[in-house]
Length: 199
Ligand SMILES: NC(=O)c1ccc2nc(N)sc2c1
Ligand SMILES: [Zn+2]
Ligand SMILES: [Zn+2]
Image 1: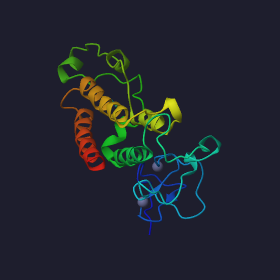
Image 2 (image 1 turned 180 degrees about the horizontal axis):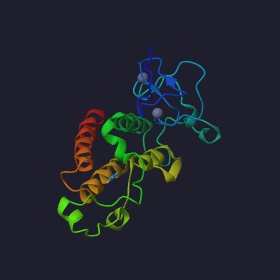
Image 3 (image 1 turned 60 degrees about the horizontal axis):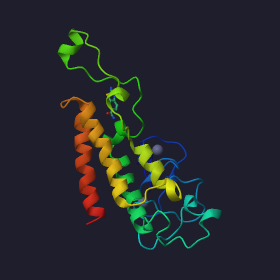
Image 4 (image 1 turned 180 degrees about the vertical axis):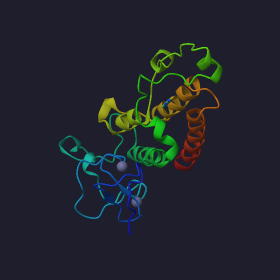
């Protein structure tokens, strides 16, 4: 009795069914991204046990991981903390407020002028003129999934990047715009979920 649409993007298509909860995911919408459809039983990142995972995801094995995986690798990021961050990030992606933060802001985006600016056709600065350190959820997902030194070395680095998304949002978007409100509310949700994952 799984759902009909991806828990992240709400679209249909080729969907992976969790064998423990009703959710379904596209391979690339799940966190971590899966390379192929698993053959046997499969639990999503919300359901798989954090300390002793029932199964391995195909992206987490492969030739380079001959070493014992359950030790903090050279990144120093304990595997349990990495799995907690995967679950936390998937929670954010499943929150509909995250849509505006899932991909890099397109450079055509200009500040939403308060009404008087529009009337005086004052030029509004471009996003990448204002925001010097862009960050979005796809960048965080990529860093969380990358191997060794390219990835996060600690939980703090992961949290700092997610908080940067919300700082950029508050800096660029006028306080009372929809995007600013979405950023504020999603930040509250993130901090709540962070406390649950890392009490
Ligand atoms: N992440 C952001 O700050 C963001 C994203 C999308 C977007 N679209 C606009 N028209 S303003 C805007 C801001
Ligand atoms: Zn999807
Ligand atoms: Zn599940």
